[in-house]
Length: 143
Image (cartoon, rainbow, N blue to C red; front, side, top):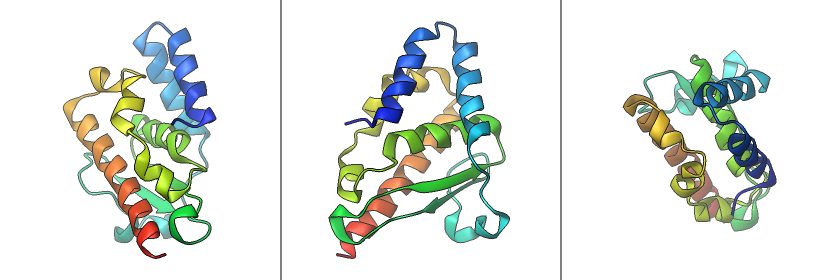
């Protein structure tokens, strides 16, 4: 159930044989994201469980299970900023109920990220995925 943007990333990863190139691509994706304004880098948007500083700001259009999900994010680490961009591609534009149906581990497994991230980065990525799921779940429950 990946978005077209995520499918584009998966195709690019297939084309890039070397993990150095894949890391560079992820970092470039993070650099291309608009920065999150300082005013939104607050405890309420901070993701716990990440070695780096990470903030995710939900942007949910509508109410209930059919509300459309998006978020903006920021990190003080370039690779993590890139991982935020990957997650954005995975979830952006889905309804909140669809977000809850995404098997992020399986989708990200297609990229081979878990095999090439440090334990701390993998834990941080799981924390970001859980935050996204929590935000979507909260939006569904507000119906």
